[in-house]
Image 1: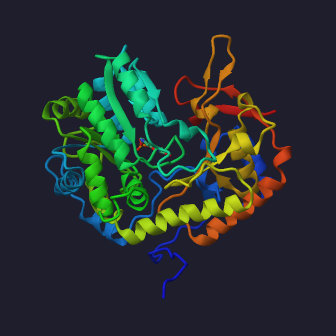
Image 2 (image 1 turned 120 degrees about the vertical axis):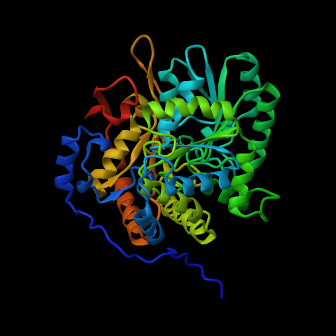
Length: 457
Ligand code: F0G
């Protein structure tokens, strides 16, 4: 018999209590946090969908690996295991450990960037963009145009617009730092990138002699979609699909806090020895020696094991289907979503949910606040708070989309947690005409969403 119920393919061995609170208490907590979920205390959150990054439950095997961690400063056994796991997966020879994804970004894009340089991506993640812009370079996003229509169904809505890529490479000839393919396309709705798109980008980059980097932090989730949605890919394993995608690129940066089930960690991988050497010099100055790069031996063990576990077909099926399950429940309630549902998160189109709140009053942030007040659910705005900029006259130049992300930590929540979230959304929908926008009272220059203070209008 073929069962319809997809179960969590694990049992729970160790539990962590969730602190429950009342709506009245949460109204106060939210005010104290200046209406910014990054300023809430985790103990005041019931369901934490802020991020899938570093929040995974590690397996018994990973915890056993933690005890095996070799904490030697140089030449640690744990580094050898991590290095080998990354080499086998990426097919790249030169591997540099980093303490997380953005540390790798700072090193690689710090080396390749600088004033006048241009970086092109299907969509830069916020830290990627910030690290590029911090060097004085420019980051340009060119997702396919289908990406912007949240309701439109497209199997690979994370793809890059290759005609725009050709045009930009000609326009910025000699000044392109790198092309960066982000899989899955996190800021573009967690949407996957097809192998065909990666192949085309790769051949365009080779033709123009431009470096192609893979931001591969959700490479296993992306491989799931490729296998199930792309013709000719169905007979490959998830791991083989990932390996083929790496083979099309010149290098990769990974935040191991996602698809390696690690609580911290990352790496840079290169085919080219000279690039690796230049980056290793920077690594040693700021991250640590080249055999630990800011990580403890135990972290490197967890990463080496996690990179194997994540390609387990039962896990990946549960992962993608359980994300879709939340999406389906919200669709039934009439919540406007980014469709189809992506891998690690469900994205709500706040512009459609709250048509009465203009982008300059941050409809996404309004929903983030509602979700917390109603259900103690923590989420993140991916819209004009995160990506908005100011015109010369001081008015807001809004982001392309006003999304709210419910990112699902790996192997952490069960189906009843998800049912609870759906129930809270029922109430969000009932109160939707009463929701109000916000204004920013205080903000830093870079990555303002982390620390900005808001007030309700
Ligand atoms: N690239 C992508 C696509 C990411 O999603 C992230 C992090 C990074 C790079 C940076 O990695 O956090 O280890 O420094 N994304 C997290 C998120 C923070 O919530 O989506 P990091």
